[in-house]
Amino acid sequence: MSALSHSLYVDSYREPATNEPAWLSRLRRQALARFEASGFPSPRDEEWRYTHVAPIERKLFTAATGSADTDAAEALIESCRIADAWSLVFVDGMFVPELSERHGLPAGVTLESLASLLALSEADGNAAWLEYGLERETESDRHGFLDFNTAFFTDGAVLRLEEGVALEKPVQLFFVSTRNDGRSTLRNLIRIGRNAEARVVETHVGPPETGYLGAVVNQIEVADNGGLNHYKLQLDGGRAYHFGGSYARVARDGRFGHHLLSLGGLLVRNEVHARLGHAAQTEMNGVFLSENRQHVDNHIRVDHDEPHGSSRVSYRGILEDRSRGVFQGRIVVHADAQKTDAEMNNRNLLLSDDAEIDTKPQLEIHADDVKCAHGVTIGQLDPDSVFYLESRGIDAATAREMLTFAFAAEIVERFGPLRERLRGLLLARFPNAQ
Image 1 (spheres, rainbow, N blue to C red):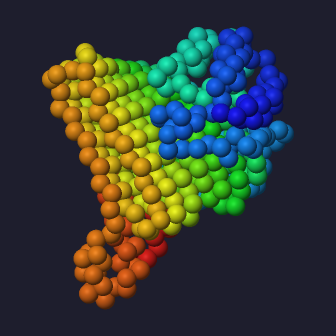
Image 2 (image 1 turned 90 degrees about the vertical axis):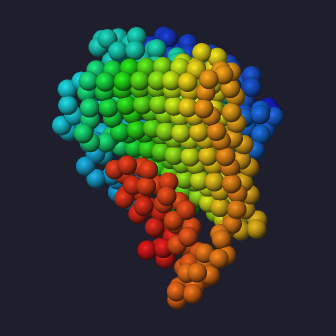
Image 3 (image 1 turned 45 degrees about the horizontal axis):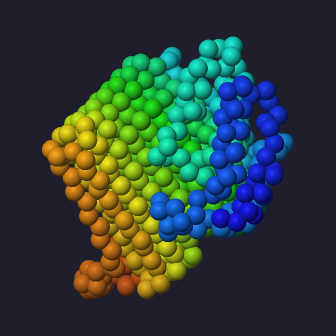
């Protein structure tokens, strides 16, 4: 790792202007020291062997100062807004309350910007919970991008549900980038209380010809018998760099769903890690599409820590032109996690002879009474299926789009109440499939 990757960002570090709690300043300094020592991840790290982040290392992406460009952001927001949802909007890393919607939130729900809560934490009793939440990185999760995020995050979203609260409407978190060479570094805390339920739609969007860096980390906690369905719409512009990580702990009988639609970005890394308690469940579905020279890396890890847990992971990739995709999935069944039921599947469609996919599903089993399986396929469109549609009067290009859309839509159908909205996003990519 070159010294350049350390100095550009480390030298730019400045203590936050606001009076942060002492414990947070300590966390930032510790993370900055680790980042200065190790830098960004490199292909020498096994978990990053297929992804080079040199373009991020060589260029200093800077955080915004002053006020957010709300005029540029509004059109981007409307292009992917979910109907009838509460929302928090962050533009270029800054919270924009006038574009957010929190009217009518039920009692027992906190939906606020992290910076606002940190400023009030000593007075309103949130200090202990926020400190616990922000310190909750584990050694198995930690790497250079997480340290970078801890040192540099400017704000983020906080969603906290008290015991027994069930949100009838989803919460949409918008992360909008408008500035060329800009950086949005955000930390989100999501806490679902005992017997509580929520849906969260995490949305990343930016102009197609603007180059920027988004580094957004979610720390998620689901308490006993709680449930969270987390949808991620990664719709960044074609010149964007994106790192997004979701790290969830799911307690006894809890349920965590993660559903990804990844369509944009020049260099993208999507991470999802979940640790499951007794009889906890997780379902992870993903569709990623890449074209031109895009690089999309998906990294999944599920740790079954206790007995009777279940996990289902299903990802599909569609790659065109000279793009490259990565799927690394790992399910770890620890020694105490008897009666675990786990499945992982990755299917990939290559639409060009120059497209490439690296896929690496893994099972690591330390218990003896389990049911686990994994599978992977890589292929092209079936010529017989294309010919069948042509024989019904459909031209070859349309036939290919229809088959490609169907390949992706099969996973999108699992996205529950958002599936129609996401089918629309897919149809924008494959208009002839209608």
